[in-house]
Length: 365
Image 1 (cartoon, one colour):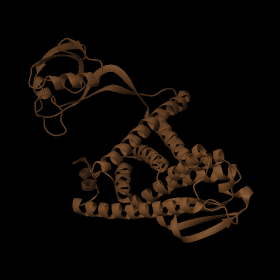
Image 2 (image 1 turned 120 degrees about the vertical axis):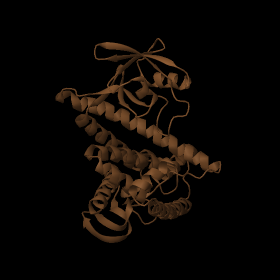
Image 3 (image 1 turned 120 degrees about the horizontal axis):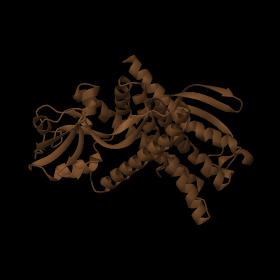
Image 4 (image 1 turned 135 degrees about the vertical axis):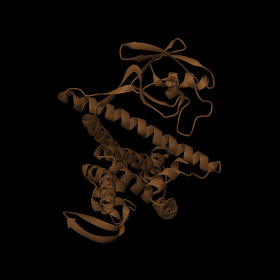
């Protein structure tokens, strides 16, 4: 358990540090005085001043912050070093820098994983990876490593079209041509109308991809290319899921799959058990989650601050400082209360499930 907790703290701390480092470096770049760089949320455990910045560690571990001079108010500040007196472009740069750093971190992580674990590529050959016991496929004589060449005379060159065709033929006899070594075998099989949970109509696991290991000198380029693709894929999925959840709330649907720190701890623990590359892959996905959530236009988040800057650009006037500050404070209070509520709910679910494995299984029900 100690190793699990330590792994969780390290993963979360790295993601937060990278995010806040983005704000920190951007602020320094445009000449803003960073008064404090904090890991965790106050109250403070300890802090050390280096140069003009206090670096602090705080009691509430699920967050971090960069406190910039003149971020909340224009009174009693040094104009040349204050966030609020910087140009709109400079403020946009500083506000979005944390999100960009999390996105960049995800790309780097995915690239490293691809470098070491290989590049998946489509072979146009659909191969049987496994045959489930008692399934129609087993009864028909399909074996592991067989290649599915055609179904009812139609060439099979990808998994999705084959699965769609089999789904349309449930309960009907279909003819398969299977290649086994040098032999081609004609087989008859009837896809199940009501297969068991987590099993398909045929009861086979198939794939048309293989893992390719480019020459070592090429791997950084392949890794970077597929790392960007992976980051964009997960970014779109996370953003889409967030939008769907919000729209569902307006329709009165309470999300069941939302989890907080306890859920992240559970998934991190399971990912670590599966190996360093699984853990890194999850860390990349988590970094993208942090990026998407932060850019969401809600008060106290980066997206909330971005909203007020965009408002200023469009309407050529700023929202009064006291009003903006009050909105951000209210947003922060709401987020903290929501985090506490989700954490309590997660603890109850964890206890009821009897452990981490049961807790994770509860999300698939």
